[in-house]
Image (cartoon, rainbow, N blue to C red; front, side):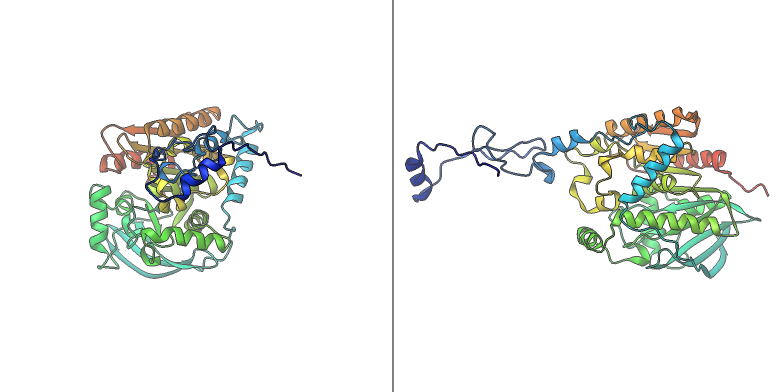
Amino acid sequence: MARIRRRAFTALAALAPAYLRPGPAAAEPPPPTGPDAGPSTGPDAAGFESPGLAGDHLPAFHRRLRDELAFPLAWGTSPIRDFPTWRRTARATVEEHLVHPADDTPFDAEVVDERPGGGCRRRIVLFNVTRYSRVRATMLLPKGRGPFPAVLLLHDHGARFDIGKEKLVRPWYDEARLPSALAWADRHFGGRFVGDELARRGWAVLAVDALGWGDRFGLAYEGQQALASNLFNLGSSPAGLMAREDQRAAALLASLPEVDGDRIAALGFSMGAYRAWQVAALSDHVRAAVSACWMTGLKEMMVPGNNTLRGQSAYFMLHPGLPRHLDIPDVASIAAPKPMYFTDGEDDPLFTAAGVETAYRKMRAVWRSQGAGDRLHTEVRPGLGHTFTPAMQDDAFAWLDRWAGGRSRR
């Protein structure tokens, strides 16, 4: 039976009136508000934790939690020395933490609209992205005879929910969304629609809305926490559902007769970049990926002022419990030795320079260990922020042409 230590209160009679009698209370120092603040009274005063939270809604003990994260399953730390065995084990661990179950529902894909435009063929495709949801996707096919190399386009978050796939593919089918889409392309992509540009360069592209965006609208910034809690209560999660749907979209793309299933890449910006490297790690259909502006070490991301600490959008990019096993770049490294392209701006406010460098260093070590160092491209662009400029796009597209097939040779 646990014993409770008792303290001797030698001045109890004197203390009691102090907090019972009326009048202004004695001045006390305000509780610390910094992210590293500990208990306000200290262990030698009251002897208990108060307050329980530091700044940015971090628990007062967050440094201890952070220091406990040793990422024991990371390649090079794990006792598993055979890389294929490690990759299978690490992927299985990620799959377990997705919470959302795997899905083999027939796609039952249906082309409901096709027309020429913008130098390519434009399609609307309906398919079962899971056993729960049938969605509308946009697809662009280049001129010429296939099968074509293909890119799965993965849209960002951006706290902009009225458009999803329309952030990457010009919405010829919906004039009401065109102004928002044009504004987004101007803001982040130098006025380009990334998908339309890829189609002109010989790539088939597919873009699908994540839950809450575009056709699957209904999400607002403040509602993300409620959606997350409801999905958790229903045995799912926002990040797990998104990961599963991205796996399914890649599998659909590989199944289409116009697509060369051996030349499929994923590409995304911001949250879409996270999705791109994640689906490359989890899907055998994806042979290469371009990730623009989303990579960091986890510990370096959990710092004062980081957007992640606000919650909300973070729910789409976290798998509860997984950091007890793997760091963020460790998950991306499951994709090794596939060709992978990571680019970020030096002044990106969402990721610290230390976080980006930590992640790049970890990944470079993995690819080099497999004799594939030339297949991993990591860069930080001087003077740029959270953006995917035309120059960045051109370099990424040239890299895709080299490593994932470029124009069809048939």
